[in-house]
Image (cartoon, rainbow over all chains, first blue to last red; front, side, top):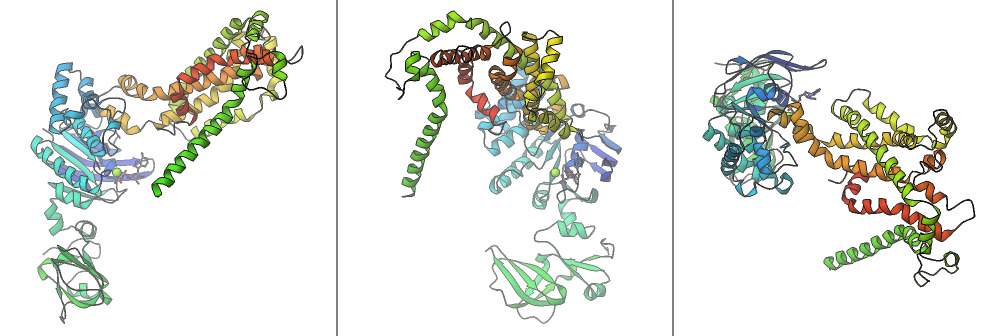
Length: 335
Length: 276
Ligand SMILES: Nc1ncnc2c1ncn2[C@@H]1O[C@H](COP(=O)(O)OP(=O)(O)O)[C@@H](O)[C@H]1O
Ligand SMILES: [Mg+2]
């Protein structure tokens, strides 16, 4: 079991209020991603759950029990650090087995579990190596091995893939997701990369300035962003925002349309007209950056190849069903 | 073409490194060579490099005239004792400054280092008088004490830099893994700190072994270490180059051997942990 509940969790460092009241329900077995820009408090919130920082207010419940006064080791959680934080003087076997040794398991039992974890992570040939003799991806796997071997109630990951190169990152992303599904253990995963969030999460928590902006499934966030921040943060390329008269006509202070929901017409008279500033041809997609005068710079995405180039005039027609409306406070207008 | 250029660069820098290495080592080599010459040959101009009459009579004379082992034992006690006490004080001091720093930690460190900026001769008279009234002149304890205090700032400073390098994440990982403070100390912190401790200890041993200002001024015979033993060949009856060299060779031999066997730790120590 690993159900985690936050009730009005607060954290201040001295006079600085970092986490401004977080409420969250994390269901047992789910994969929850904390995403947000750098410095928004993701790591701090994770460390509060881990017990590496003390809360300034509020409650953290694990399986219904308030753990704010419980030391980290007794919370039954395990953490994978951004820096891996492997013990440099211990072999892979020692690293993975350290927690079991501290828990007082017998040597045989420890070895059996370490070897099982190593097999899951393809680390068997490296069991007797030291961390410095491993590649970045292998170190990452040792850190994960150390987390899974203790069979915790939940895994906590703090940007575990950010030190890997792009190709390896995609591969590890898939491995971590698959492993979590296979073990069925609750996971909280911190990242600043919204693509990682969208691809891995069952549910995403979007954080900004120490506050939870929205909590929902990836598709919910994509289709029904609660406010301007979430709308702009989730989705790549970013959503286009148009303000002024055109928005007012639709009864909103700001309207937003995703690049993939703009229909591109070569010489249409309707929609938002402008001149292509930059055209990016990826083969699979074409991205147009269009200078649309009063509407500002707009991004449009076309699936497949489109032979348009910088300087061409186009008209962009928003899909009426896919227009997001926001009020003056930045909150979404529904209905 | 590019490859040849790099090969040439490697050859040139290798030759250069050997040349400068030899240049730096030369005084020691010359001292060792001189110690095997007769007093006359030691003075000869032009000096002969290898083709002289090799003799060990200097060593015999030196051992007859003064008791090498007595001084060597003093050196071991003074250098070893002062290093040990300095470490016992410095480990907790550096530890607390590295792991729970306060606003004043930087100031304290600088203040400690500033004491090394004062020339020792500036406090020679007061220290001498204090030692005199406490009966510490020419005593091993007195020398252990003053060398320990003299090196303490550097020892604390070095250990602080090492401890600072131990990533907090690793300590937190150990906490997550269920290690108590005691086990964290035994299984994680100490093994990670040992290389730093070893190099600090070695460097301090060498500094204390060669320290000449306080040992010369505060000891005469009883507590006199090897530095005093060397000095006794330079003053009273004029200079005896060959015997002085023999005495010096004998004095540095133990520390040279120690240094040779612990090169790796020493390099780490001297670069203050910059080499990983
Ligand atoms: N120990 C600390 N003392 C003071 N401020 C801190 C401390 N830890 C984090 N902060 C501040 O809290 C904010 C959030 O940090 P963090 O949780 O690391 O952000 P994120 O992981 O989202 O990038 C930052 O502004 C950071 O400077
Ligand atoms: Mg962070």
